Amino acid sequence: MRATTILRTCLLTLVATTAWPSPSAADAAQGVDQQHAFDFHFGTWKTQIKSRDVTASGVGAWTEFTGTVIDQPLWNGRANIEKIEAAGAGGHFQGVTLFLYNPKSGQWSEQFAGSSNGTLQEPSYGEFANGRGVFHAWTEVAGKKVLQRDIWSNITPDSYHYEIATSPDGGKTWVTGFVAQLTRLKRAPDYDVHHAQGSGPEHGFDFNMGRWTTRIRAVAKPLSSPGAWSDLSGTHAVYRLWDDWANIGQLEVDGPGGHSEDLALRLYDRKTQQWRVYFANSKTGTLDPPMVGGFKDGVGTFVGMDEVEGKTVQVRNVWSGITAKSCRQDWAVSTDGGATWVPTWTSVDTRGG
Image (cartoon, rainbow, N blue to C red; front, side, top):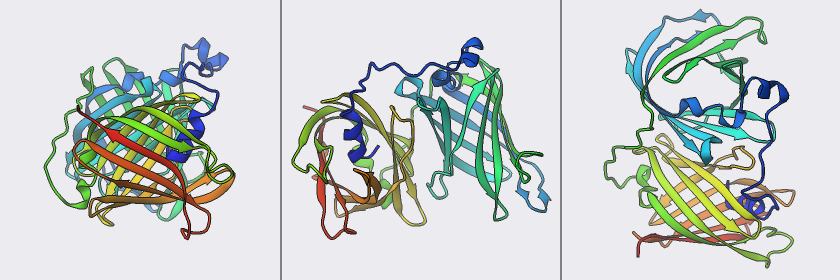
């Protein structure tokens, strides 16, 4: 979650020991703990995929792929990040899927991004019951919005089935376009990511990989109380998902309101040569719209929109003072289109002795 929202979350009376909502009575009777519904998914898997184009005029022939899926837990299982790489007659692709549990709704969201453009697709939402996970979303087929359904089924400790179908008639009929059968290779996720040194914009976040100690000064209400600063401290762990287009940062901080866990998913768009940075917080389980930008002459600048004190404002995040052992972030908001800026956050990350 971006800095303005992290502090609002951390200043709430909700702390790390707050109890999460319990599953519904029906789910409890079935033994379904929604916040841990994806625990079966953690690990390293072999995948056999069949995919075909679904258009307004019909469906294409099936194309087969073989690959690997690696899924690792975040926030003690209340979120997870999946990497997929596969190749076949249809070519080679890499992808990332972020799963977030929303404790308020008791539902999960699922969002996928491919290496072609580094943009998260529209989310699908759902939950698990009777050994199946069923999610729904809106997607686009031949320029028209249609209903999409994702299903996890036949779940065992060492295998599961996954498929995606679309419906042009609001769910009356379904056409399956993606089918995957997965078989476990390892209980643990394979974290190793090959890395090639480089200096292009796709390597802008290379300096940030690793574990950092962070100290933060932030203001919860920058528009009405710009002088009411608070101090927070914690850790910032950043690691690669793919070499040159995807990485994730996990921030854990303690402040006046207790403990907060946040993540930043960073995806690189090779076409525009820009990064998109998506933020989420474990207490809400929702994803903010991305901030967009990149690095130039040792300074990273990212801009986006957020809501602060009931107003939609422009947000700016600047990275500076980058060395092997330290870096700095400054956040600010603007209510006048960038003519003036109100500081909201300053953090300094350090590592080593």
